[in-house]
Structure formats: C-alpha cells, structure tokens
Amino acid sequence: MAPHVHAGLERGAPGVRRTRAARPARRDPRAARAPCGDARAGDRSARVTTPFAGPARVRFAPSPTGEPHVGSIRQAIWAWLYARHTGGQFLVRIEDTDQSREVPGSIERILESLRWLGLDWDEGADIGGPYAPYVQSQRLEGYHAAAQRLLDSGDAYPCFCAPERLDALRKQQQAERRSPGYDGMCRAIAPADAAARARSEPHVVRFKVPREGATTVEDLLRGPVVVENRTLDDFVILKSDRFPTYHLAHPVDDTAMRITHVTRGDEWLPSAPRHALIFDALGYPRPIYVHNPIILAPGGGKLSKRHGAKSVLEFADDGYLPDAIVNFLCITGWGHGDDTIIPRHELIKVFDIGAVSLAPATFDIDKLNWMNGVYLRNLPEAELAEHIAARLEHDLPIEVPRPLDRALIAAFTPLIRERVQLLAEVLPLVEFFYAMDVPTPPAEEFLTRRWKGRAADAAGSLGIAIAALDGVAWTSEALEVALRGAAEGAGLAVGDLFSLIRLAVTGKAVTPPLFESMAIVGAAPCLARLHAAEAALRSAAVGA
RNA sequence: GCCCCUAUCGUCUAGCGGUUAGGACGGCACCCUUUCAAGGUACAAACAGGGGUUCAACUCCCCUUGGGGGCACCA
Image (cartoon, rainbow, N blue to C red; front, top):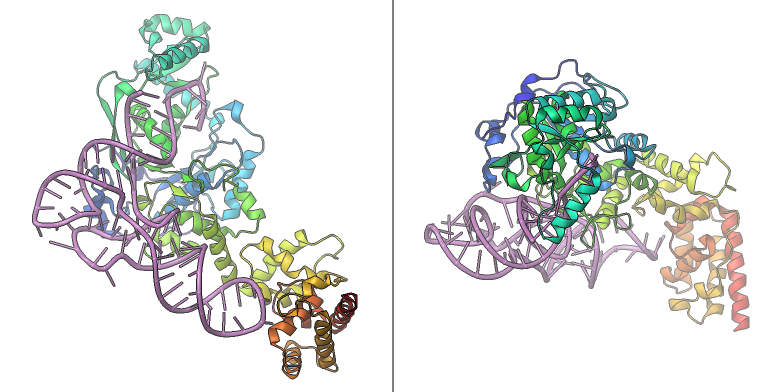
C-alpha cells in the first residue's frame, strides 16, 4: 500500500519562479532507512525525523471568508518553513468555490497578513506562476473536465434530489439514530437517462463510493489511516451552480499544481479517504498528507474571537513583532529539544513537519507576550527606536507636533527597552516626556509607605532635594550624585526620597529610571514640577 | 447515534525499552535594585486509569476514561 508519494517530486517543477538561491540538495542519511510511505501504525520510530526527500511544493490554501487567525496562520508558517527547509516552493491558492461565504477584501487581507509575517510565496493568486491561475473560481473548466471523466468512467453520477428531500432524509436518519448521509437514490438511474435529464434539470454530481471494502490513507504523521467505505456516503463533487466542492477541487488543483505535501488541519482527516478515492479514480498520484491538529483556546475548546483567535493583523496592531509570532506559533504544537527562542533562519533549518505534535495545543498568550519581549529586547537599538517611533506617531495625542523628534526617541529608547513586552506598552511609559505640563498628583499619592501622614516631612524633603539641585550640571550622573548626597545628608532612604521626586517630575509612580528621565525632561520643567509638588504638600500639611 | 484522531508538570514541549523524567512560559522565594522592568539563583509542579508484551515500560499492544474533530450543493 504505497501511494505514489514521490511522483510529484520526480516531475519537478519547470520554470518555477525562485525567490532565493536553490539550496544544495543534501542527502540526508536518515532518508535511506525511513522512507515516508512505509510508516506503520503506532511505529513512530520509523518517522522520528522526516527524511529529506527533495524540494517540496506546499501550499497555503485559505478561503476568502475573513482574516486569517492564528490557527490557519500556523498552518501557513509550518508550510512555508517546510518549503524553505527543503528548498522547495510555497504557493498561495485561494479556495473560493463557495460564492456565498466570500467576504470582500479578505484576499487582500490574507496576503497582507502573510507579507507582514514575512512569509514570501513563489507562486500565488497575486503574482501568478507556471500553474496559474491560483484562484479556484477561475479554474472551473478543470473541475468540469474532471467531473466529466468521472461521469464517463462510471465513478460519478448526476443526482437530481432536491435539497428538501435531502433535509428530510437527514432528519429521518437522525430521528432513527442512524448515521446521516446520502442514501444513493439517484445511483439507480440508468446512465443514459441520467445524462439526458442532466441536460435540462438542475443537478449535482456525486462520487460513487464503493459500498464494500475500506480505503487507506497514508498520513505522514500517523501512518495508515483506514476507513470503512460503508461509513462514507456518495458525496457531492460538483454543486448545482457548477462550482466544485473542496473534495473535487483539492485533487484537481493539487495535482495540477504539482503539490507534493498536502498540509491541512486534521478536521480533514475523516474525509481524506474521499480524496484518496478521487485521486485514484482520476489516475492521479496521491500527495503526501500531513494532517495537523488545531490550536485550542486557553480554557479548552475551539479558539474564538473571545479567546485568542485574533487575526494576525490585530497582533500587528497590538505591537507584536512578526518574528516573535512566527517563532511562537511554530513552537506551539512542535518542539525542538530544549530550545524555545528559535529565530526564523534557525527554524528554517530545524523545523520538521513530520515531528509535529498530534494532540491539539493550547494557545498560551503569556508565553507569546514574554517571547515578544525577548524579541523586542534583542532588536538593535536603532531598529527598536524605529518601531517605537512608528508606534508613537500613531499613539500620541494630536497636539504633539509631527513628525516626532527622533533625538528624543533615541534618548529614551534605551531606558524603556527592558520595560516593554508589546509596543502598545510604550505610550504610558513615555508620555510624560511629551506633556507640556505635568500636573502635580494629589497629595495622597505622595503620602504612602514611609510618608503616610507626614506631608510636612515630605514637603521638607522635597525642599532639600531642590536645594541640592542648585547649580548642578543637568546630567543623569550629576543628578544622581547630588540627590543621593541629599538623601544621605537628610538621613533618608534613597528610595523614599526618589519616590517623591519621581512622582513630582513625571506624575507617575512607575517610570523609566529617574535620573536619565530628568536629564531628558530638562532642568526648568523638573524644578518647576518639584516646586509645585513641594507647595502642594505644604498646603496639605497645613490643611491636615 | 456512527466514524476518525489523540493523551508527559497549570500551559507549550524533550524523551524513541534501562533517565535523579529535561527545558520554556506561568507560579513562588531570594539576590540585584531609585519605581517598574530586565537579569541571576532556588523551589513547587507531570508520565490519566486498567490490563497485557518484556528481565525491564513514560516509551510497544489492547480496553476504559478524558480531550479534539468529522458525518452539507462549507471549506
């Protein structure tokens, strides 16, 4: 039972547009003892590492029904990585055979998501390629020809059953606790009669599934998956609007496009035998199937808009980095030894589509956030500053003049680089640098911990700090020396004094390092704010 | 109801018949420290249950249970 898994590879792909130099086709020694097609059920040792079998042609084939979310994007990431790993091609095909579900604009959004992630494709809906078009609604003739061949060979038949009858049938089957499925009524119509009626009557075309026997599909990850044919019904391959269903479009297109590995969600596993049957009936070599599990929501269950199933573009808006998303999504559902942070170029080297986990993984937003922080911190400072600038251009109030002062951003970037996980967290950390006027917070905010109920002492301490600042060069080093000295001289814990100053100068209790911040803000505003705070605390002391 | 897939710390995973079951996130404690972070160190935390196979099972097989998915003129 060895489907012609390598046939697609042997055919090669003439004239394929390449966006990068072809990788040398290293011979992987493991390939010799572990050919992909021969894995046995339960014998994982035979496919510990996917053998290097030559350049793979893989595709990302989304339906234009909205923006891609993390689940489908991980699919794209894995496919892309595998294509790059083998020096093969990654293609993007749009599966728009259901006109009613189409959401305008989603194709562009899908491509935009891939571009943002840095997943480049060699052939696709927008750029064409040797097997164009890459949009299924533009490939109808191919499906019609295939359907006709199946009709001619007796592997398919026209079905004239009305939707109402099918609904009633389904209801009855459910009521009788039988498996729902087409009962094969139109199978009995003589081919000549059927063909005649088909010329004038609305109909669908159904595949004639053998009633006996079983169909085995070889899955790269699990080995053979066997399904009894009697559990399959005569499924529709061509709808009454003459559009194909996925069951027909997939074998036709993946054969036409020389796809070597079909990677898809494991919700397709139960119907994989249908596809295998079509490949066989059409005389097409079967591709290598890789069914991988979906990503679950934190509480269990399917990922939804409420639970982490944000679209990729939303992650972009929230200030995540493409590299972090790629790394994170790649390692959810797959692991590489003790490694966690694996940069893209490294992923291309080590990612193994055949070693993916078979149990569904849960989306761990905390880990993603942490990882994004790691990537942010690892960015060269100038690059980080660019990201921050772009973010701030958008986030800062309109009163702040644009374009933003790059020198200022360059000055505070090192102060916040270890304090943000998401770009969205930048604004609250730096907005006081942009405020014309930082109002003194209410006295209670100063009078916490050591200062509780001691407004007069707090005011006095601020007075000491102000005095210590007199004539000091306004650099972070000089400020620190002066203020530490002041604290020591007054017998104060540095933290106690600095917290008052921090709140007075920035209006916040949590800020980037104090002296560097003061140096950036400048002497005049700092002193003004310190005086204002001192005065406020004094009047609070009198009032109390 | 029927069918398919699946099962190691809370989460993502490593493990390929003999291990003190490893790492990461998160948690907790401590260190560093002007706040918050970042960083460092330590700790707690898992083989779902039951049968086999074997000298030996987390690893192989079966069953149960749990989880996921499918049974459309949707993909």
